[in-house]
Length: 115
Length: 111
Image (cartoon, rainbow over all chains, first blue to last red):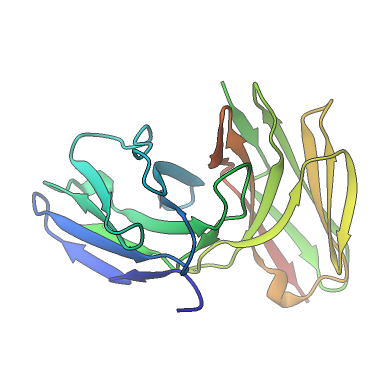
C-alpha cells in the first residue's frame, strides 16, 4: 500500500485477555517501530526492528509485551494479560534507511481500551 | 539523560503567526524532528533540522540552535486546519533511529 497500515483500528478488551496488534509497513522500508501514546501524552518508544538484526526491545514496559516481525515486513505487537494501564493508542512507523537518521512514517494507530 | 520540553497548549488567531518552542537535552545530537498530529490521526512529518539556522518550507519554518539546545516551529498565515498537536522529537543517543518525543504542543487556531 501507499502508507503504513495498522489493524484493528480500535480494540476493546477485558482485563486479563491477550491482544494482537498488526502493522504493515511501507513496502521496501527496512526499519519498523512501535510507539505507545497515552491520552494527552507524547509518544513512548516500545521496540525497533531493523532488517534481520535483533530487535531493540529496550522500550517494552514489561514482559507482557512482545513483538515480532515476519519476513522483514509485517509486524505483530502482542500484549498478554492486558491491564487497564495498557489502554492507549499504539502507533507503528517505518522508515527506509539503514544508516543515519531516517524520517519515520506513521500508521493511523490502534486505539486499545482495556476494561 | 534525554529530555524534551515544549509548552502544553497555545492559542492563536487565523491569519496570524505563531512560534512553538522546544528545548531538549541529549548527550549526543543527531538532529531534531517536528511532527504534526491532528486529533485522532497519525503524526505526519514536518521538518528535520541537523544544522543551526532556519529552514523554511512554505508557511512552516523550523529553527535550530544546537549550542542552546533549542528549536522552534514557526507557522505563518495560520489557517483553521493548523489546529493540531505539534511534536518535537530527537533521536536517542547512540540509537539513530529511535525517537524520543516531547509531550506535544496543542495549538488551537480560532477565527
